[in-house]
Amino acid sequence: MIDRDLLSELQLVLIEPSDGGDTWPSLIWTRDEVLEAVNSAIRGLAHDVHLVVTRTEIAVAAFATSISLPADWLATGSLVWRTTANLRLPLGPADSFEGDLALPGWEATPGRPLAYADLDRTTLTLRLVPTPAEAGTLELLYIAVPPVVTAIAPGADLPLAEEFTSAIKYATLSWLLRKVGRLLDPERASYCDRRYEMAQAAATLILGGWS
Image (cartoon, rainbow, N blue to C red; front, side, top):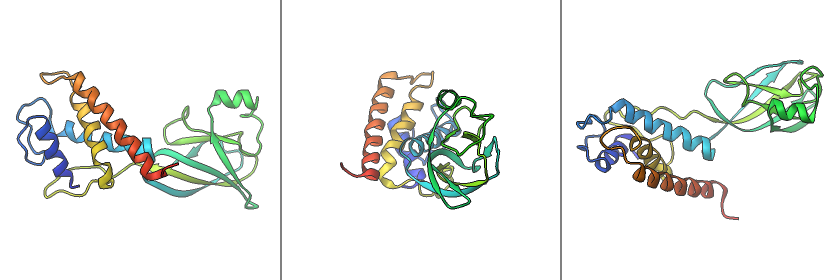
């Protein structure tokens, strides 16, 4: 779907003149607010469902305590530690608390990595648990930040496949209908949340198949 077509649909639902999202005469929302809601919905769906996965490799030095993630990183799909001898070891997610319980002293005692921590670290960095005793390579599958929707005429395709437009639409409406103002409508926003959850479940099935 073209981004301007989606904005026109949103305008019709919100009783605004349909013009591709260029104007919002009610003054309840601005064009920038609506675009931010659309982009947030796209990022949220990509993060929740792992719609598009990107692969990269990161060289890691021995005793490294902080590893930089790609600038467009949104979420981690999977990580594999590859030794210099080409031994590949899958890593699971952990945090510092879990590391302390499983491997007391892991920060000060280097070893072969068993997990990675990125939730309690500085943005766009992670740390291996335990600290690697030797150099190696991280094979990273991650979800990249989708391209930003600008809806500049004549418009462009949304960065996600057509099948997922419904999820973007209802996640956007949920945010817009919760803005404090004349059209604040928690009941309709909750309905939009349920529609998003249905679309999210459908997207998961499309990607993973029936089991």
